[in-house]
Amino acid sequence: MNIKSLNLDSNLHILVTGGAGFIGSNICESLLANGNRVTCLDNFATGKKENISHLLKHKNFSLITGDIRNINDCKVACKSVDFILHQAALGSVPRSINDPITSNDVNVSGFLNMLVAARDAKVKRFVFAASSSTYGDSTDLPKIENVIGKPLSPYAITKYVNELYADVFSKTYGMETIGLRYFNVFGRKQDPNGAYAAVIPKFVMQFMSHKSPTINGDGSFSRDFTYIDNVIEMNVRALTTNNKKALNTIYNVAYGERTNLNELVNLLRDNLSEFDPKIKDIKIEYGATRQGDVPHSLASIEKAKNLLGYNPQFDIKKGLKEAVTWYWNNLK
Image 1 (tube, rainbow, N blue to C red):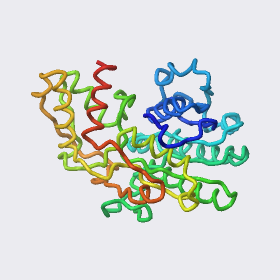
Image 2 (image 1 turned 180 degrees about the horizontal axis):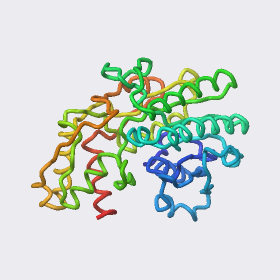
Image 3 (image 1 turned 60 degrees about the horizontal axis):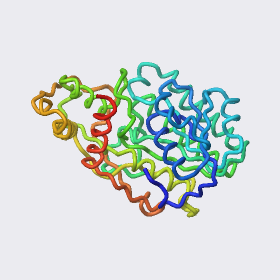
Image 4 (image 1 turned 90 degrees about the horizontal axis):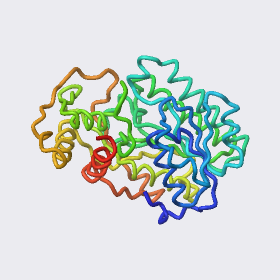
């Protein structure tokens, strides 16, 4: 995404934790294109070298292979940094249910390490990836930032704890923090493989292999699917805002529309059929509802619009067209 119009100072040095991951690597690319100096911290537990291999020779890019669970790695990464975009985390609700201890170590202890390292390095602003899973069992739609329910998974607990820690650090140490609750992000570079692959790239790869995707449940569950360029926009707006009222708070990052899984799979099939007509005839299978899944998710993005000037350009149809084209050209 071209972020020149968002007026981010190109002289800033920005640390992107988890910078080899799906979201992080896309952010790194956009910052480098803007002229920024970028440091990436990643342990490659879920991030991939191929996501950033083309950046390694860039004069303004540096890679630190390290782990946010190691406070010394965090301190080294924070040296001479102006801003931090903290994307590093161990995602996935099912993964956290299967292994809550590791999810907590990375997402809570690692997050606290980064806050401490940022505080000690006097980093100007700490922007972090929060999660829509924080809304838990709240049935209210759309989701409004100050109304949440009880968490439904260990992952959701860890991401809520992040918000609490950031709030305490802003009040106690005077740090500037902004949390971004991501809603079902998708797009180029999202990993289609592995047990915890996100639904869109997983379905795309199954269709491209002429296999039947399996929907968990009856397909009525809905999500506010959010294209990667909308997420990049929000991260940059969080860095550039001079509005004091916009700091030390949480924002939804979404498009503000919901799509159920039946609609999603049909959109994917239609888009992919333009490349391979045989995909049009592939049938959809249905399985058991997944433990810990929230039935419906829809974000209010009014707060982000009002305080940060957020103006997402990609709805589900436009985003899927871009994403499917990328997958076809890069993974076929």
